[in-house]
Image 1 (cartoon, rainbow, N blue to C red):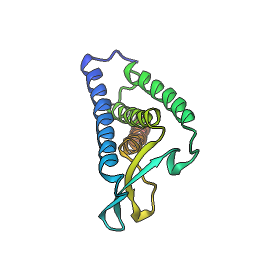
Image 2: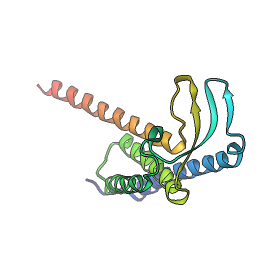
Image 3: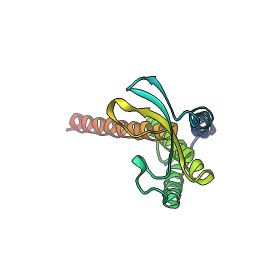
Length: 165
């Protein structure tokens, strides 16, 4: 654990706030422009903008159990936020990924608390995927970056062990 510089706090907070802002802005636009028409193809049969009120988790699982998601999200966000701001992560990729996951978690939590559901609108039909939103994208990209950082660290560690032996 190392003490963070003020600039690091600013960078992490900026990533989180921009992620939340982008998520909420795009959801507001979806409510305003998509809810009356329900769906708008961008690339017919591939990518549509489709208004959905998701009352569950991915693919609508555990519908109408929003308090479970709020509690789990709160614990996860607080834990990741503590790890991020306490300086437990020195790898920049870990910190950016964690900030993205936090922003996505907060974005969806705002919907669950204020609306009782999460607004989804990105409908990738080419592979018949679930309709999702910006917050979901931040969480998935952040998780992917965490995996990439972990694999990179493992490879570096293995190379270091080979050199020393």
